[in-house]
Image (tube, rainbow, N blue to C red):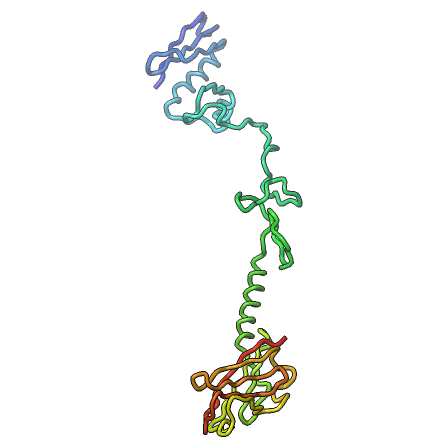
Length: 255
């Protein structure tokens, strides 16, 4: 609550010539004074003073008072002036919010530093280049190629089948597999230490013949069965054998 003291300069025939109203706070501090030069002004002032404790200040009046305030503080919430930006400050020294650019002026990412990168959508980059990364889609392209390669590597096509001989070919890895199964062979019954042509040239088709002789040992190494580059299948035994099972297989690259 505030207190008021009034000093009248002169009053004649109930007409106030002049007065001064001094306003004091609850602590007794002098808040200010108001000069009045007529009874009408005085009466109006007193009416307003009598209602000070019941009335709120109007928004417009409050805005006016606030605009008249002058704040001159060394710190605000513990921060000094260098911690705050000026009203008309500029951010020219910083990157704008959207700073995608055709140049590397904002710092390209490297193998040792974080930075900006440009996304490429191909698999033709011949060497490392800072600031360039592979798109996620190319990861799918690579995965598809790997999956297809794995599938192709398992794809063996039968290219020849005879009474004793079957040949498979894998086009993905350029390999041939030849399986030979013959029971109760008696070709070594009267012959030893000499080559026997079991099947003639081109028994293995020309497109799938081996680049060199492919051999496999049998019967503790005494017997060797092999495929020649001309597609024939031959055998050789170090001793005579009345009967033997020739069950073997070869694999070779197709050049």
